[in-house]
Length: 208
Image (cartoon, rainbow, N blue to C red):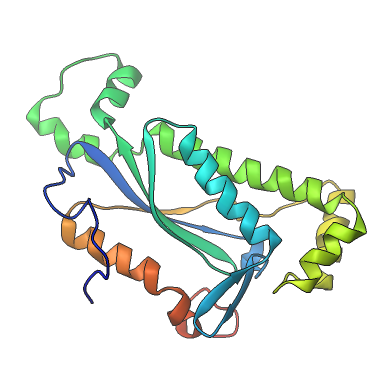
């Protein structure tokens, strides 16, 4: 499948001077707490809206991070990030200004601290806002119930976890894939864009 809109990243982009990652993050126990797929379209509930807002905010406050394509699904999200000037980042880490040509493969294999910091900050921001929401008035919580989910059981379970101080909204880890060339980038973009309409056969769909 060809890309259905023009991307500035498809022509002449030097993948050797930036890290480009496709990331997948799942909700705790892969519960569908972010919304629902109907008619091949994702309808985000209030939790899903918070996730979208914090994903954008988290990328905006980090100058080396550029958020590209993303898709929020009922129990996970996919997105692509560009991490610019990785050699400069590594220089700051290892304290050297020169890299031999035989070190380039090592550079592309290293996972920058800025990526894990970005994801950790994003997860923390989302969790904090959702905790605050769950502790707010019933009027706000009824808004969650009247959207496409989560339902009353999910809400009750989350509030119970809060009381026990064992609240988890995200899976502990995340999945990352280093994009190395244009073909790989196009594949990842199309996968993310087609994710809602392919939900019926998605490995993350609990009904499959």
